[in-house]
Image (cartoon, rainbow, N blue to C red; front, side, top):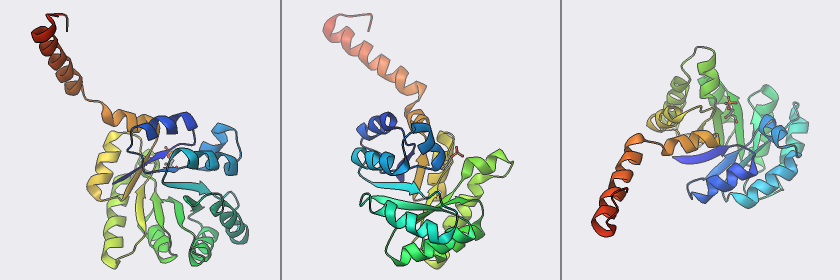
Length: 219
Ligand code: G3P
């Protein structure tokens, strides 16, 4: 499973990249807005930090403008993946961009039917939002499971990116469901490290070793 960071914050990305386990980045207009720099500028900086796919979302809503924007974004860096929303215009733009050899991440996917449309349009990635479905009382993870099966049934090459992951269990369940990629905020990546038995075990190891070789009973 590839790990992507769902942030446009450069400090979080630098820290995440330092672990050597981050395979890419997803951004969206809300995440870019928080950083205060226009999308082209911010994603160019992100590409200097993380060597992997970096999703940059179009902000136009009509297909011709989305296509023009996508072509422009794709020129920023070889790792840019253009992100289009799962609307009629977004799917039109995805088909056109895919025909030009541009990799598209289709975002705001909330049903398996929508995921089929994206795969048929030649999307490189589909982004089903787990947490936002949970928020409205639906089982978000069921959507990941359904899409993985449907894509396998027909041999679609589109990668399933589990998005809107809110905690470590979302990451683990996405991996169990067979998602190719999980994108997560930095705090979720960080939470994956934590286990009280790891802390307690390490403390004991250090205490035993220091006691035996340094006469240090304090640990
Ligand atoms: O980037 C899209 C998605 O991951 C957003 O997550 O938590 O805002 O629903 P969230």
